[in-house]
Amino acid sequence: GYLNNDSHLDIVVANCWNNNVGVFLGNGDGSFSTQTSYSTGLYSLPYSVVLADVNLDGRLDIVVANSGTDSISILLGYGDGTFVNSKNYSTGYNSEQYSVAIGDLNNDNKLDI
Image (cartoon, rainbow, N blue to C red; front, side, top):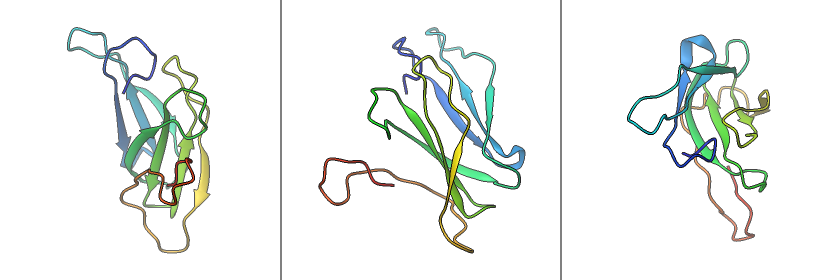
């Protein structure tokens, strides 16, 4: 994704055992910045991520499936490659999130998770 609007591909990873997601900004030459980490919460065990503009501000945000805390985290993007601290939402007891997807499931022109 283009997390800082520079037209270089960037990488976002789920760091399960570190309870965070990592952002690597692309340099445009096949190399990437040092990882910047964002916590998803103690014992969250993030497993997968997806990028989408969940708050419709024109900037990519990160949505994270947390297998350890039965939750998803949303990190809103500032558009410069940095993100707001995560806000977590419960997915129910023992749901153990291992993946996440986003789309308009009910045709209301709003993204659903």
